[in-house]
Image (cartoon, rainbow over all chains, first blue to last red; front, top):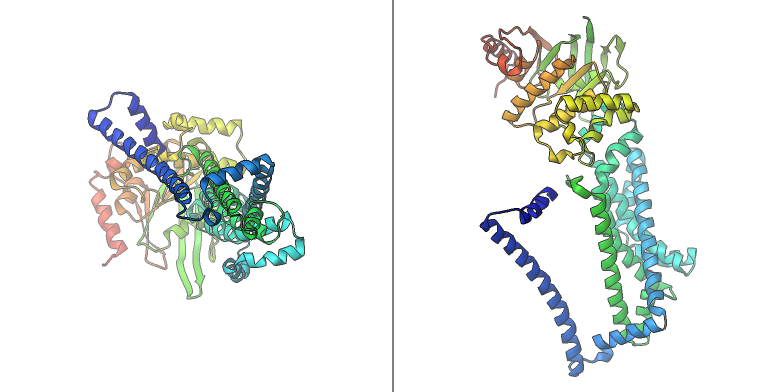
Length: 282
Length: 255
């Protein structure tokens, strides 16, 4: 795959046929067109929003308005609240996300190791997987206390079971003949794990990471709805209660940007981990 | 010259909830040092089971397998195993793939590293040692897989349908290639296949197994008149057809 891309880049420089140049131009044009349309859509959405509010066709008290959002952002920044609340939420999310993924992978390794344990726990995992983990929120608050630790715990629980099931499934579906191959060299179970099972499961683990980013945000925001005194979820709830839709909309916007950035971060990790065609997602 | 592999009264039964299946029954055979032996049989006759037993991946229900004078109790470095596909790990470079066995046995040092580099050099893969498997052709990948097997310096190579995943033309070429490498490195080889022509063209001796439960039906010493014994030239020998027909009749295949 990447070799093809490299060759394209090479061809760009060296002499290539006119027809191929045309083809490449067409591909590039199309890519630019898509990008432009995306930007246009975003700009149009906000412009229309602003315009409708200015014309009084929608009530900015209920729908807010881009210009008021910018003002709110500036206010939050001036009071030092912007970075504080965003920082807290991001920190909670990253912590919950990392803990959920790491713990989940470790438990998956244990279950892979002991087929007996895996069989015993199978029905419980299925039940836990279908249980809406948010329902456990109040329990964590009673046990751990109304603070960031409870919020992290909720985020962790939400991604934990999915990670276990996904990663274990990846482990189990590793090609048996690859395992046979290392066994012919007399590999121990630890070596089978480290030389074959884990590396072949990197794509699965990365996929779990991608799912977990989204789930952790859900966990953290719900957690903040329930208990917090700070964070974007707190701002949203507070804004809703005092009917300050400007604050709610602003927080939602910050949230979407932060979530998108974190997702891109995972994509970046994926690229650098699976670089240069090492994995052909087989 | 002595027998490096001895199989005595070997029997293998598989157990499942549906009952007991006898895969192999009363197998007796010997493989001499430096010999190339093919085992042919109808599909499902337990050919691959036999190889797994010799490799120490499975343990027999009856009888015993003796390799190099010792009873097999598990995988050893004496025996190298080649599977149907090359199974090069796509996340490792060719060099990292080739030293996999040395890494697992904990014998990767400057001496063995030099040996492996020598093998890569001799067989034209040295320039590719830092490439990833998906950058190599099918034939080169199979060659890399063979070098991975040779890296631990086994006496005996077990080839489990080692060419069957390749398309026909590549398969002829790779068989030729692997055969010459095995002969050059002076290894004993046991090839399991369902391809009659392949078994005759490569082996000094062909062992025909019956349908399940597999037992030895016939053993043929292959002597072909050809100048230089390579799998390709063997296929042109006048006796080739004679052996082919005999084995075909032995296999007794009906549709």
